[in-house]
Image 1: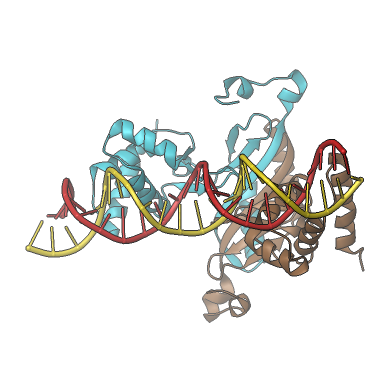
Image 2: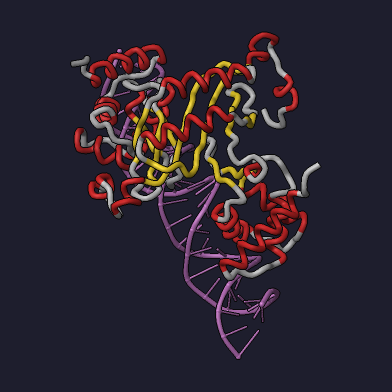
Length: 161
Length: 161
DNA sequence: ATTTCTGCAAACGATTTGCACAGGG
DNA sequence: CCCTGTGCAAATCGTTTGCAGAAAT
């Protein structure tokens, strides 16, 4: 049983806002509540919808203005998965080194962590004369189960397509 | 001394166009000539400029219509480096497994290959029940030389900023 | 009281698309 | 000749921004 994530986020954010001299507003609270109330990746538009459910007054502009703050503060990670819109991942607080495997067949995203990967990345980076900062591994693959059976669990659960 | 890349590309493309029942046009030729006449990454807009130098009649629309063909055919790789516009990398023909290290300080992009990385990616992917297709590693780091000396070779050579 | 935040709607920039004509097979 | 490819300009879509009023400190 671990500490409530939302609480931890709220704490970090308070520090962040404080350090930057930024103000606490109902809109920012709602956006944060929405962003870390899910484990799913989301787009700015999706976040807007989720935040609006918590606080009707949240506007698209505020979402777009708040997202960079959360990214800059390290709470949220911006990713580009090749889709039209940018995607945000709220799971980096809990799993700071996780990576992504994307199924080409069902578009599902599987998150994974691997200490060897982490180690190897650091080695390579240092060997090249750099100090590692952000690392992103994106692997695309075909689902073996789907290939074998013609369907897979993830496919069945898929929302779209 | 290896085979001329442009020739190889022209060959692959001929196959590709043929297989798809697509036609050979001066505009497509020029775009391909431009795309593989450089080792630098480029945006659609930059490719347009380069292609126009070869064949004035090339238009923006045709560039945008041709790029997906090249990506689909596996000749060109589309990457998202966090910039506004998508970036294309012509070096995957020669180095199919290369990855990218981006200097946070000078924005320079260093390409690197590593067999261990390749191996590890495949292991992880299989362990998760997938067959690896595309793999992209993007590492951001700080330049050690810059930190130590206040400047670095790449910084000096940088075009912008 | 002062300064930051906000929503709105207009602006923006990259990419896509409908159309009528050009040109490859 | 037929059908695909093209340039042009308008349309689209995600994201950003100027502004006047609202809210936080």
